[in-house]
Length: 234
Image 1 (cartoon, rainbow, N blue to C red):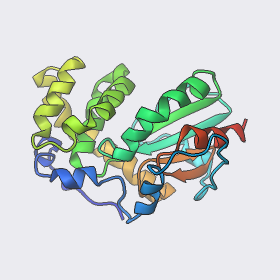
Image 2: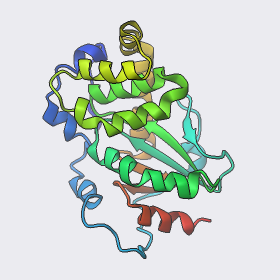
Image 3: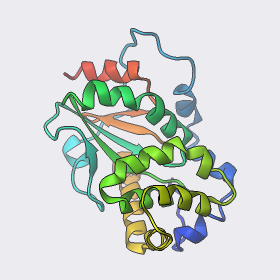
Image 4: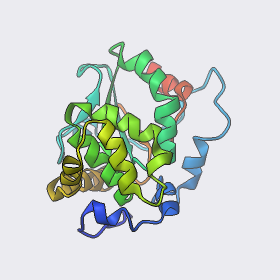
């Protein structure tokens, strides 16, 4: 079951959330085993493809949602990955720091994979991160990258607003544009709608969750595991 966050501005809400709650927000279903699986000993070089944890209708999954899709790679790539992530999820940050660079180089940049990245925030700070990335327009993915890399500097600190403001200023935001972004109720509603659809229509209850050509995989997979899945679809 997905937590419901009251309709108040993210600026006000994120200051009230205890840091420990934020950093523990990769799962909302007691699915700690999945989260732990992704951070144990590295997979063997010849990793076999893990079994999917469910399947979805790919055509339905790719139908337009509340927000325009943010994607990397060729539209006609033979493999499509839809990733649901939360900006305050440590496992998501770990995946994007360790696995994603090689995934991009080996599969996305070579036209084999299209990656669709979707918002699945569990708390107001994650909502704020996604809103700022959306407000960054063409710099959406660079902003996501910076926020993941600097997650320790804003997700669990006492004053998340000031920490996010400093990061945002480096991305070209002013005080005014920063506050305008985080008080945009329509944008906040749309981010929540993306999360709600992921939960209700596709069974997402933890992050990161990947749908690879319709097969569901939960947890921050290694590049060996991702390669084994993808290679079997090429």
